[in-house]
Length: 443
Image 1 (cartoon, helix red, strand yellow):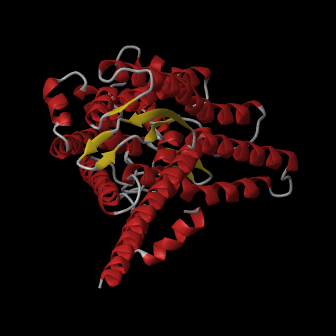
Image 2: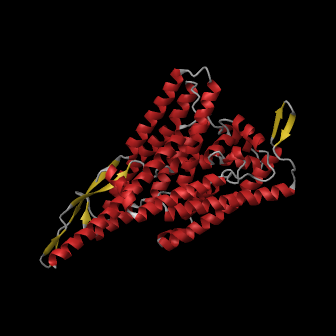
Image 3: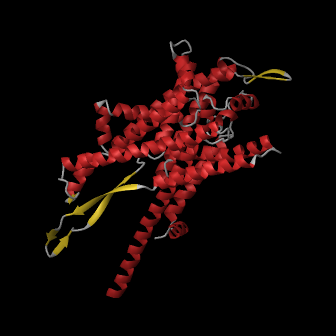
């Protein structure tokens, strides 16, 4: 079935249409909430301070929140606390036996772990909110009319209100993300970040032209377009790439019928982790800034924070290491070679020249490790090289490689899910039509 045929089925399939409409409505609600401000904050002062910190911690948080930081929105903390809690729970699941057993229980265990993740996210959000309240109280802007404060009436009243507002904002975003995942199309958490980045694109273009005005510099524009197009093309090429392991099904006779004897393949994606690597890495690399704000007197914390300043070589080194780690980590969590080998054995399937059972699991793990290594290096290169090029060539490029990777990766995953839903429903419909035709002929 062609791509256009799959998309043409959207209007014919009520369930798929409802899922897409529901996703769009949830994203619309999220964007509307972006303009609800924290009470008692001067939005103009906050916006000016954040824009002047381009390339720093504030800029990174503003990117992940879709511009909520500079708007002083209730969604200022973004979905970052949930991502951080998810990282911690997944790491603990590899160490603590009770969590590991919960993960093996299937859907019930997944729901329990997800519940723990929510509680952890709210606890982390509480810590982030305390720091944000103090940060807002300290924000000032010097102008012709004198110094303006971001908070008109600082104190415990403002702090408590801000903490409640920001933690509630995180809870709402978690709910929206989970609703999209369960009742919509795509991964809700990734789509929220996607929506925030895409929303900031028109504003970035407008600011570029407004800043340059009469001096547009066509060469810079051509370089920006070339960087974006090449990056997108590389992402699409690798995201579609697969390593296919051939699989054969043994023949077996049941009565007079012969089953099996077919040839298939086990697809292993070049980037099995998708956009999880850069999203997790971006969230975790922002943590030293939060830690420095919570414990300013902690020995060595200021040195760590300055070492991972955005755009510095140390930042890029740490960022690449985190991306590679999370690509391997997420792949190991989601793709269990032993379980795949057991499933093939139960189906009487085998890989040519490889014994069933342990040997099959070792071979799949070997192939998966090699493919993931290449995929992790590709993700790291895409996330870092465009940013380094823009800094080296002095191109005023607002979007970094991470932004492009998240946008294109999430878009491809969502499109794949829509196509899969379309094919599935089309297959059901075709099967029902064939059954009706057969029934009429029999009658």
